[in-house]
Image (cartoon, rainbow over all chains, first blue to last red; front, side, top):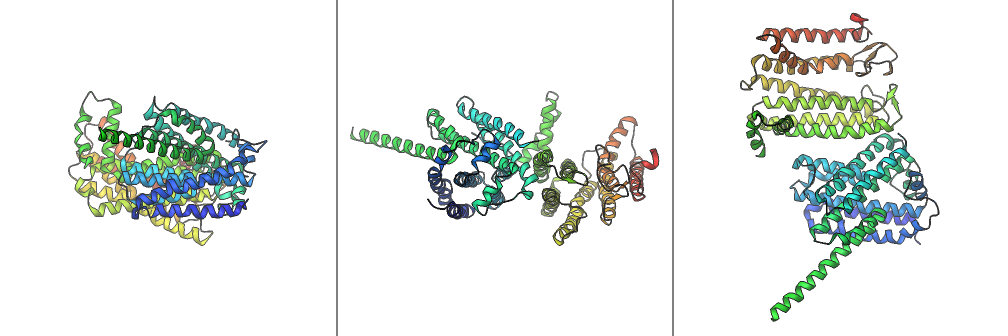
Length: 144
Length: 153
Length: 292
């Protein structure tokens, strides 16, 4: 088994390529979207699948209380799996923001702050995007 | 407020969204509003509160796995990390339901995928992508075979 | 272009059958159309108050003896009231003026200043340090200086709005109310700059007392054990709320309200503001010289 720190470094570099694609999305929108919402999440999910069995090896810990969640995060493999989870979904939501901006004719430059915030502090970036879209469309919710 | 209390409050907020998604065909508009905006929005606001209050005093960082692990030894930051999961898993769940509807995939197919997304986020998402692709391939094949039949006839 | 359509809907507000909630909805829509950028800023600031209130609930760190998030939230409230006022006042500026390029750039400068103050004050709280009067490190010193320029820029919004409303003869307002609105808007800038620049020339807004926010008025948070320069700043920045409301109230009591009456009110209010400033410089709590 590869050292978890090495996996961490590789996964991060890999995901940054996806974010770079999103930042440059106007140059190749379709390609950027494929990379950030399909190719990279797919590969991250495979890595996640390899690590996920670790969650079934725990005799203590779980998702039912914060103390138990913290026990799970005591294990490097579990933390790595959890990290891959963040990487995949943060990137997916970044890609979603780029698609939404395109749909609502919001200039790419305007959503770059929310993209960067999504990369750094996921939920803050999502809030930032909701607000950006609200300013442009004057709608809080999207049509279903 | 203690982190245990926050944990206890945030779980039902997320579960409300998941239940709305399970019964989405009955309340499509509100299932989407709750699971895309209201619940993830509230969870994200709580996340932001924790970051504002505790991030500057936290030990660790995003630079090495050991540092990420160190972050999760502090209950406030672990709680923020948990809210991040709750919010984004639910958001992706809602996206799956929307996408399934747009592609006319039966809700029965998406129902088993939702709990998987709740528990093992990326696996649920990828399974949905596989399901969607395979269903559309099959439809195309059916369409092709039908059209070739009608051409022959 | 949709803005025009919304303004055209004006006659709906006079429709007697329209409910109270509908009228509020129309009012908000009109306000949004009159000042879209400032309206959006107001809504976003209101939203961002939520995580700050959440942080107040969770954070145990203190600043001046009280929760570290009290100050950012107080500034949020003050700035939301300010931008909401500008949004409402914008309707009395002619539309040709509001669509001019220089006006848009000016609004952008006001908004950027407000966003800067928010980030500076909120950021300082998040990092457990002071914003105003903080010159402990070169970075924070520079940040404080920039905040000073920002504060003048954002307050100049009231000045410019006041001048533009003064020049507009077709506001549809009664003459005394029109006069009160533009006069108080200009005075808001003048009084606020005077009180705030005096305050920033000191090392603290406290004069005497325990130099903490612990001995303070329940709602406003002003010192009860010494002088507090924030009192005068508060009254200065609210003249453009008080004066128009006084005129509306007076017009219900008296048959006619003359410009002279408005001037008298403005002078009295300004004297009162300067009195609170003097009081604080003497190390006296608010109204201590009069009632206690």
